[in-house]
Picture 1 (cartoon, rainbow, N blue to C red):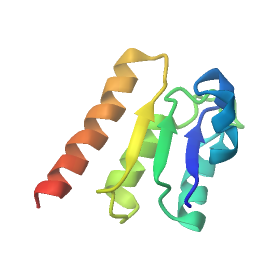
Picture 2: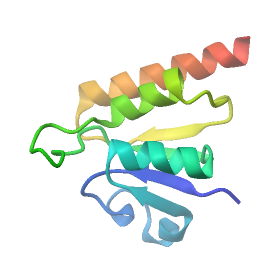
Picture 3: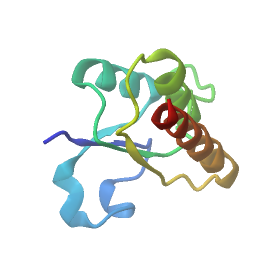
Picture 4: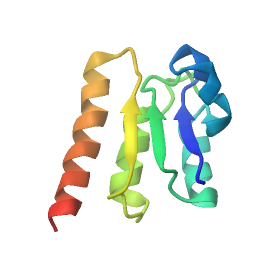
Length: 112
């Protein structure tokens, strides 16, 4: 069984999902860790996205969950047709951007 992936800089699984689901998830805290995880392990069955991922090592705003979604769509080369996802970000505008990008792309693939 493939793991589920949880992208968030601060939250723990039990802050978003039932604590009994904790063992089903791998957690990544940064955009870079997200990309590295997917490149190493392949596309998980489910991804839970936060958008705002804090500051990077230079103290600047880090690449976010939307950047991770864009990487999946435009750069990963992976077949996303079977991807299930949820956006748990508290940022409503960014949450809609992530949902819209992934939903529209997956719908496009499924119609092709």
